[in-house]
Image (cartoon, rainbow, N blue to C red; front, side, top):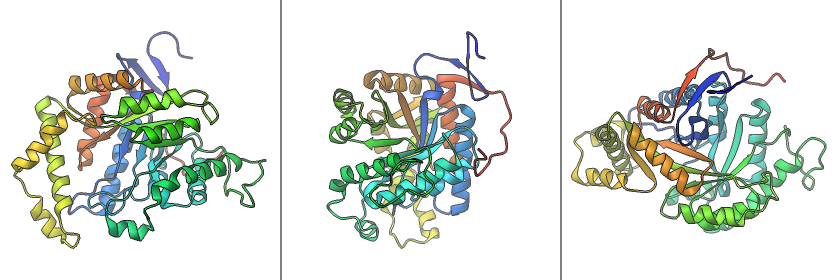
Length: 367
């Protein structure tokens, strides 16, 4: 049993620092795949980043659903979460989030019910009303102009399948959820007050994207929260892009590299060959790219700097929004850099020491 002093959790000892500890922070990853890197190598790097986050005591590791974006490999969060859950042992895995207008709610419910059965108490289901940017990708997904309007209806249907699919419950209509068990928690990802209110009246936990409207959206959520859903009180997380380094200058250099690669991948032709992409990505940084990086330093959706700068930024964000949890999106295409960012942030927030070896992971739960 834990006594006074450092708190014990899952075989690790934490010595708490001011503000939210590492265990109240999470990670959002998009499986970056730089030009010239194989899909297997990109996935292996993300596995390694997830293991680092697990060892450091982060609460969750979520994967964003993005389609048709060059350099991003996270189109299938449910599949990726299963892969990562088999290679970690404590951290919660999930989606940040499933673009619900892309999918029938029953299919999403079945996928995450199966994940929750395989990994009890380790699976989250984050859903989003977000859109798809490229018209060709949107058409391939069957994404129409009415996609955002469908979100409330599909959210309700999804929650109904998960809630009423429990053992002993009646099916939803004539449909019974496959592999029903303890359902994963459903989180709504939002970037505007209207979506925050939608989650609030359904009693659902929420993650807001840090921006100029975050404080207003947080207030909307808490003021309109109704304890009619799975949680009896509001639960608010905030996601923010983070680049950390040994010094502010090191962090800015990392950010500039990220901006350079992202900007040039976005400019590249969809038919560009790997060799053409590698040539396009060659340094040096242009003046426009440097300006973009410098502007992000003051952007409310990003926290850039040394260990002390990032810790102060995260504490300020938590205080302004009264957030229960902060989700970090480490901005780097290189897995080693993403892992380094997470280590730097963890060192800034709390000292995390793993006291037991990593056990061999089980793919399917035995109990």
